[in-house]
Image (cartoon, rainbow, N blue to C red; front, side):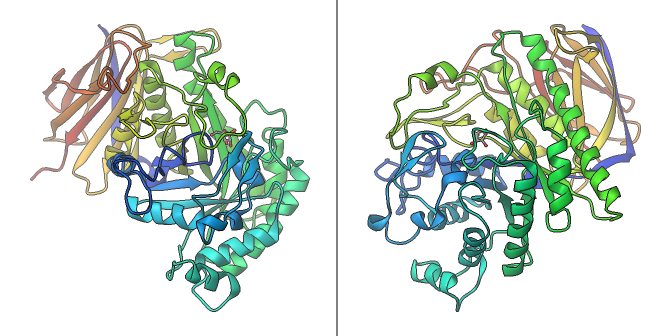
Length: 502
Ligand code: AHR
């Protein structure tokens, strides 16, 4: 085993973690809605047709917020189509994913699903085909108490209390030519600021996310953010980031190293936000809503065969393997490392479409490999993110140099009774990691969870749902305020230390 060390200083805090970084995403795409969260007639369906089995796993994950209804879908969406009596709702061609949208689930139902599931809603408005008017009306419909056209219509539709949605996206990926109503940064910036003003005039308590670049490879990346923020800085609170990882070239070392790019991407976006803030001579900081991230590439070939104009077709159903789980763990560590500026993040998506949860129509449910690091971070990664100093072997891959075999972060729990280390060993060698707990005298290891597998490509399926699951590990020693843990090659590890025990 090769050796590594990890140092932590009680006073060296990154910042308080905003629990919304464990958010997720439901778009009207594939079987995310129809056959995912909503399937009347399914054996577990409740009185509104929501699958209870999906709700249960969402609750187990303690998902704090779910972004809705898109994604690319939102750029062609008329939200009014999805309210009122279901039999009167129109069927429409859906041009983001070439499906038929029957609008059997809309704003009210999604808000009710969230309420029943115990999560909050992050709502996106359409700035592709629509603009200020539709957006301010939606805020009025959702958040205004009563006595106006839209709030009274919500009440008539059966929702007396406002949905009270606090976080809103001003469109989605508006820099992308694939977007319905794609815009230049100038065009989008102007539309976004006018929409933001009207939305906040209806409800000043809401927070707004302006669209950042769709990904870091866009030729307009950073220039886009700078221009958009020139227009919107005063009225928005966050800029969005999106990133999807791919191992299409089947180079696992390079794939797992590519988490480094997220770190750089975040730093560059923060620098861009602060540059615009400095130019504006303002103390206000724009934070990050990393509202789409995941591994996404497995279903590309299958997608090519997908038939157009279906309702709830199988589409983008990536089946995740063990190395994808490692990747997701690494990405979560990276988000935590920037907890001072990344305040919202959404694993894209929640069910069936590039998701931790999979279902069969009318049938079973199972947890994908990526479910577990997401679960661990959501359960044990709340409190204060702590800096750790890692000294571990380094190597080079095709596109990255000086890749540390060990990615790590620590989180002090809100009650200050646990210190949790999240550690990814992305190297091919086992690692013996010595963690210096000098600043936490008298602690003990409460639990160590580890995810490892003999096959990087192993997957979970409905028939074999437990092929890749975490196990409790005893591979640690505590001695003289030092804990030494043994990490298997290619492994995701969670070490929970009980601190401040009296
Ligand atoms: O999450 C799937 C899609 O990825 C979203 O609709 C879009 O915003 C992104 O390109």
